[in-house]
Image (cartoon, rainbow, N blue to C red; front, top):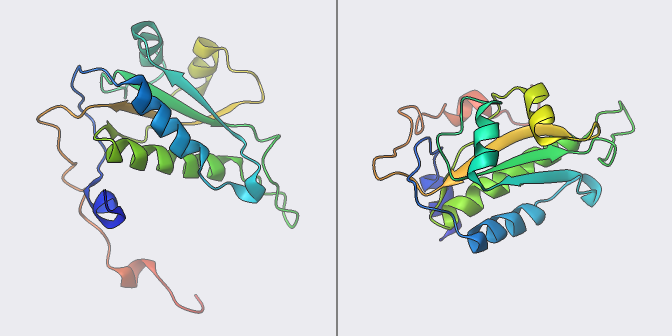
Length: 172
């Protein structure tokens, strides 16, 4: 798909069909995630792939927002591996994971699948349910699947502020 079309048509899918996601599609999405740029190419992201009914049921104990997807990717970071800005100690791990998440969403759409960014989850429950080591920080969950026939963008999806409200040139 042509890039401009891809970014224009992709939307947050919140209703999935019960069709399975093929392993080759998951692999393609993971490859796209792997190519995401990270600060100093440290690649601190870690991705937990949930692809069976038992794992998806456990995920429902951690968030209300699985949308009955057949697959979910939990994108995490290892802050101890991320680049740290020397001026103020800012850690890039969460930003790096967010860039990885964007690649995941765009790759899924390009494959005819849907996804959405889920930031509303209980990190303690997630850590406990999936045995996260202490150095792994969950950043976002991406339910993935084939959009249901009646899935559609949120009514606010196409609402965008004018550039004049969000862009400033040369100085604030």
